[in-house]
Image (cartoon, rainbow, N blue to C red; front, side):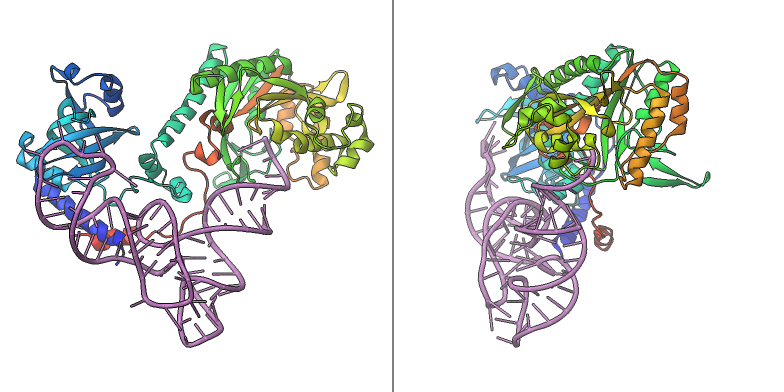
Length: 500
RNA sequence: GGGCCGGUAGCUCAGUGGUAGAGCAUCUGACUUUUAAUCAGAGGGUCGCGGGUUCGACCCCCGCCCGGCUCACCA
């Protein structure tokens, strides 16, 4: 018989025991005076003498350790990833409370009432006078020394990961601070937060394959958005001159340590500026966010200090020259020459060849925060041409830790040119590019009403959070990353057969 | 999708072509300031799944499932 099965039986028996002592195995409200982190922060610096007169506390938490020694014992209660010790002495509590202490299992959630003191070894501890039972665990906790290390289990059962690996909670707290910081900075600058459709009849705003779903009553297929861009720019047409949205995008593509099929993007649009203005704004946003989240513009990422205080800027062609590694180093003129580009890339068009060479030559080297600007028109169907070089557009990307974390451009607001760009994309689609942009007539119509000159930018929240939390995989900053389903667990059956 | 690596007790991991192991956790007992508490004893396994080879397979072979890394693609 499986242990898990047996353990559930044992634990259900414990539930009876707890009830027999007059406690509810799944309690109701518990009013506490402090959280564990509050007590640790407030009283860790205090000496034993400073804990007089007695400081009375009521706290709740999950039992993480138990050391029983006959007529007394210790336990650690964990809350928000931090642990505080409690001491239960037979003489100091009621008979029932001591019996409850004897019946506790690792993982149970309890409350205690008592006062603070320091043990002989100096650890801040609650001297317990009263116990409360709040919730029973029926399954075993991960091992106390190594914790939960199996990566698959950590992602599938994130709650266990958080119990066993308290630093995980801190990562997600930092992720929340990234979002809060960006939101506050944009609000302060007069940007309005909006929400646009996630289910779209025509997808667009990025080069990606979509997820398809179906609405029954209307009997239409809809696409989960790959980007909110075209809706946000409709709002610019309508006069919301500074808008932003922070929410999920969905792209039906590969999964990797840098890609999850659903991911969080900040997109913001500002009328009457251009990509140069956005470069300056981006630098401010990133420096401020790094400072708030990591405590400094210099952050340690996998052993390398990444400095958001010093963000370099290269044109795409300059970046290729800068990071070219090997013989046959090109000149700037080479990078404008179709023949030279064709010798170094098999991508279909001149601009795609340049972008292809850039990605292969530079991306891995862009560890320090870097703005790369001026992109080929073929790869940027929604960006405005450079006036003096129409085959290039006013676009930049922000790289850090070898990843693209931002993408911005002067928005194309000429509807005739936009129409031609869509047609160019349709031609690319005919040649087999499954990610080429679709014709969006409704968006064209909006542009026909006149969109002010505008700069727009997207920042990948997950990747930024990776850099600022020193996380190696995007799955470490997404609470429930996409995994293949596990199949039947059999736990319902085990619980059923263990029922008393 | 390709290549490489992994899946053994609840957790962390050993293991060998010949009856499946350790530590922690669990259960029983001792212990009134311990802290990876300690001490004595006990239980717990379809060795990811399915085939094959073999007198005999956790181990060798084939297929499949799940995960990690990496390449391709993408942000």
